Image (cartoon, rainbow, N blue to C red):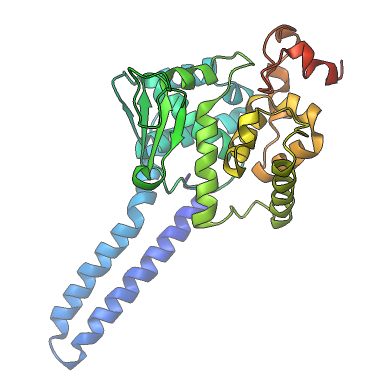
Length: 329
């Protein structure tokens, strides 16, 4: 998503070659006569091709060079623990990714206001799980709809008791669209350790869809994907094992399994690492991130009450679930 000097040079080179080839092909038709006319047409088409292939790269470079607003910086520093934990180069890269995402993805409120905080938190939800990849694109996404509350299968938010959906990554006729519940999005970044992060959950679904259409990022080793496929098969065949104590909703199918574990990996990495170090290490290699190490100094264990919900998402109290399994410092 970000344009590095190397990517910019590569784009310039590819665009110039494509423009030159088109100019040469068109001009070749003029060898039998009317050469000047074909030269002019070849030049115009070549220039248009160069502009077309360079437009996204140039736009992103311009967006990345724009000053990052104080309001956006304050939102990231106060609400996004992942951003707070990054070093200064990491923060600069995260800010550039936010700028590009918000420039290219439309975020629309449906019967609710979408302020700058909502926009930045949607962008953060998209960036966190792919921050370890050098070159990532959400090709399938064009718009995020923000609903005032949860909704049902018919996307209704009022007058029904079955409004139990907090987010949806669009499939079929909703392809290219994501829907997020505004209260659930805010709760995911509230700082409370027992809250889920619906934004990261839904963007995990898009990551999986991207893999189907565009292949794995080059950084993800094939042996890790084979290990992951075997792990998912074993876990879904024996859901009662659940040694990581993840939310049982993850055992609905392999898609939800990936999304719930991604959410867990970034929401409560220290808990997951203690519960299932093998699984944590697999996800660390898959995402090229180590959130437990990154977030450790921001998450003192003492802030989790013994009687609060366990941050692993099991629904049990912390003292009855993960606390006994944590090593004491």
